[in-house]
Length: 398
Ligand SMILES: [Zn+2]
Image (tube, rainbow, N blue to C red; front, side, top):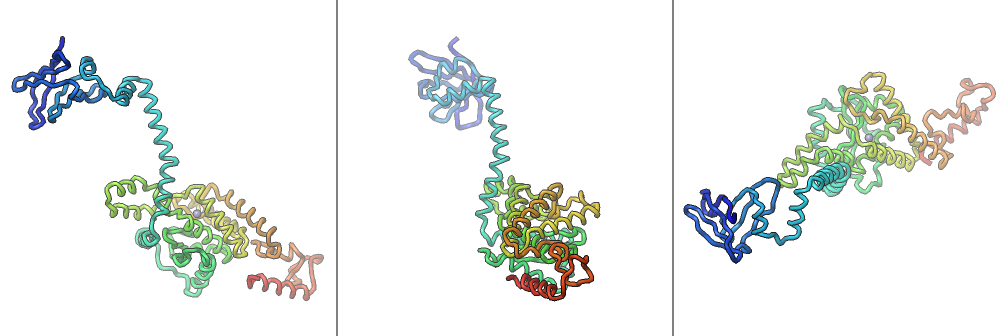
């Protein structure tokens, strides 16, 4: 039969007309219904591509439409001259092609998640203006104070100034050194910890200062946090985690919703771990910075051991707090710091006494006080003076 039933819309009202579509000679089409009777040249009409069992639409030049369920005759009457559409149409009807497409989509999703999101996050982080990052940092610090019980430090002013000066020495010479500052906070609930807040602020808890036994351990810990700052790890990792939010902000142009990221940062800083790659990057930065300041990177291992001992004895390991020596990798990181310390001493044999736990009495037989040493290892008081002198020389950074 040379006709099929369809629904006709005139393009002006939403009224549906029952019609019959007939093919006439000379490639012409007639659409006939109660209030409809029009004749068209088939070549001037456009048939929408076939998609599963959805209705097909024939579009007329004046905006009118004919909708029909799929009918083999449709494709004969209105041959599609678009090669791409014909190909798509064929693929859509092949189960194998559909299965392959689904697989391809899954692979694309994985690739996007594993490589695309980090890549894009890193590029966005690099483009965030310094002022925005700094104001983000201030807000994050405010949140730490407000919601996580960070209170004003109880360290006395002189001690804060002393440690602050050590921090300043480590950042001196960095291109954006002025943006860096260390702040101390009393954080009983969090315990010994140090955090790199976006924008250059390094937060050190009083509990960490109390735990560390040597100021060079403080140097090691803050050098690691400065490493996180230098590589924008807090911002990059937060962007990765909050990617959907940021994308939404970009698409909607609603910058205020991007500030929701601020809420995500403190939570992230305390509850998640940086990726292994980020931690290694910050560790390497710390080793290089310490060595450049004539401090053995082995002090980093020494600080880590104290943190490990503290958190292990606390039974606090799973409390959800990401302290800077995050398990289970701290053994690897301690080993790396020890290796960097050994390389440092090879390069600077004159600084061997900078090694944590180095005892000249045992290692060199040079003892400041004769009563402390074994008979063979003892030296006379002249040599002891010599040792004192050389130690002064090392202290003054010669
Ligand atoms: Zn870290």
